[in-house]
Length: 351
Image (cartoon, rainbow, N blue to C red; front, side):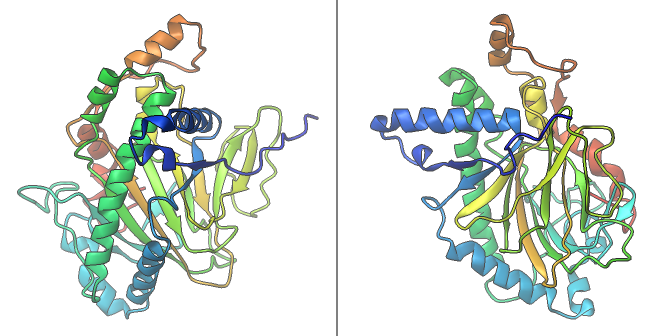
């Protein structure tokens, strides 16, 4: 039987070379871009070292504020319930979110990019609901601005790795420069032994880039790494979620100074399948209350997402790209098609 390769941790990539325009930094930029390209093909997941971009105290303060909210009474948390708005923006109770037909053992608050002329009867078109905890909104809005900036930085670095021209990058940038971003603040109590499900069931993100900051809790976030010829030996004791795919689940434990980054389905379309969105889940069996803060950097709502010209050049050079060709999509239509029917009733899954 084939033995697993020594690929049990995700790569760590330092984004520092792309934080300034120093022309003498070209070699480091090229190395970073190549590392991103390799990680997107091999894993769809990687760590981003942000020590040159973010003070580690900032996300720690966000975690503290999140814990303060989740420690409130149920009555107080329900004051910003999803049902007050578009069933997208606001607070979801423990087990209110559903993945793969099973209740997820977490609670959370969801925020989306503010829109003009909000209308809570339309999917994702309501208004964000903020806790009244002092400094909560101010600190999180500062984080949102930094993550939006980080999204453009990482996208540019990926354009280098894909061999895009500067004109092609500017065209791609115009599709994400008004990102219809999403941010979640999630609280995970320990997973009960008798719970018929996961802390968060296995799923693939359907957008562009996810930047996940999580508290130091180990052995919670898991990523499925495909390894042909290696049968999965899932020891979670929970139902298998990867179907017949061969591979293993690995832990993506927090690393100080880093966020976990993964690509969503829009990158599958842009690269016509060269980059693939990867299954991941949360199984939190520890004794603590875990907090994570994923930020989803997405295309513009009206962005037309279609295979990039650089992919055509790769194919002409003989680069093998698996699977059928991807169809163009308007991101907003894709988003509403994915989740729109989940906003009509309370207690439906959204991720």
